[in-house]
Structures are given as C-alpha cells and as structure tokens.
Length: 276
Image 1 (cartoon, rainbow, N blue to C red):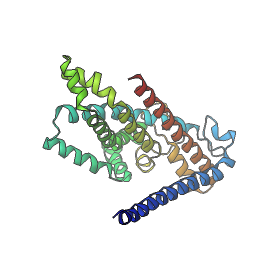
Image 2: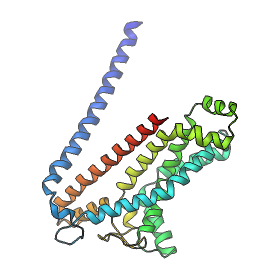
Image 3: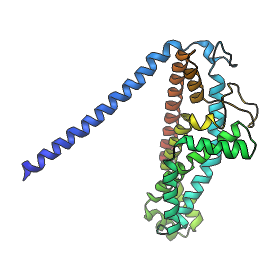
Image 4: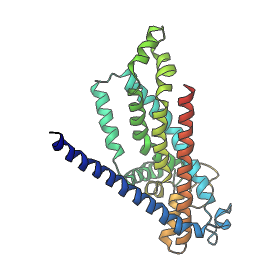
C-alpha cells in the first residue's frame, strides 16, 4: 500500500516543480528580453519635461499615469471597501441578493478591458460630453477595477475569525465600532493586496484608455484634458514603428514602476500588520 501511494506523490511533486520551473524561466526570459531591448535606449532626453517628436519623452505619460491611477482609486477604493463591509458584515452571508452581487462582480471581472473602453467612450465621452479626457478615463478605470477591489475586500473581511467579533461584542462594543476598530484593521493586509492588484491592472491598461483618455502626450492641466499613460505611450511608439527602441525603454520604466508600487504596498501592509 505504501509503494502504491508513493508513485502518484512523486509524479505530482515532479509535475509541481516542473510547472514552477517553467513559469520561473518564462518570467526571467520576459524580464531579460525587456531589459536587453530597452536599457540601451534609456537616455536623458526620454525624461524631458515636454514631449516632442524628437525626444519622445515619457515624463508626461508618467505624470498622467499617476494622475489617472490616483483618481481611479479615489473613486473606487472607498466605494468597494464600504460595499464589501456591507456584504460581509450586515447583509448576511446566505442572503440571495449578496449571492447575486458576488456572481455579477465575478462576471464583470472577466469582461475584456476593450468592452469597458467602448462603454466609457459611449457613455462618458459621447453621452456626457466629457470628450477624451482624464476624467472619462478615470471613471472607466474605476468601473473596471471595482469588482476586483470589492471581491478581494469581502474575502479579506470574511477571513477574519468570528472570535474577534464575539470578543468585541462581549466587551460591550457595538456593531459599527467592532467593524471599524476590530474587523477592518485585521482585514487591512488583504484589502491592500486587492488594491495592489487593482493598481497593477490600471497601470498596465491600454485598450480602455485609448477610447476614453485619448493619446495626447502632454501633462494635463485639468481633468477635462486628454492624456496618455505609460502603457498607451509604449503602444503608440511601437505602432508607429519609428521609435521602437524607445518603446522598449518605456516598457523597462513601466516594469520598474509596477515593481516599486508592489514593494511600497507590501511594506505598508507589513507595517500595518506589525502595528496590530
């Protein structure tokens, strides 16, 4: 009997290590390819404050990326977290309406970004007459990442042990105080993990922003002006075929920005966990 169970375990262990190895090799190859193609084209002119057809500076795209990401999170993070609190703490875990919202959120998470872009173009750009603008792009991104933040925050709240809630109630704390002083701090690392994933999707988004925020390579002075993000900037340079090397350099900077955001967010989550 021992020999019979030993063989499948070895096969599964080998398959697991093989899958992990293939994934690691592909990841290293992708990062190495981007670095080799992009680093030689990183030069001071790429970081000029103003974009021209000669320097194809990525500074305006970087600033626009920060603005669009910040606006989308300011819209979505409070809405998604408070909705998750209602679903997890107030609505009841066997509520049919809650189940319906979960199914809809998971369905919206699987919709291609191009569909969100077309919706944003028809509703924000055309119907509301916002035009190709930072505002239209931010609201489109907010709708796109709302299901992700909602579901991740709800799962983080549901993972908090009920013993913490019962202990707070036993000490005389009310429902609202228990949620915001006990449950929410305990679930904060998981909530931040969902926000990190949302940031990664926003920073790397292209299709939805081409139809809503536009492709103007200038720093926007107000939310109703058009702008391009780093991913759109990289797409524009690659599609034109005139500055392919600078497009790879933009990919290197974009990769660095994503890694930096993940490291900063992970550090913040660790500090929050230590503070508890």
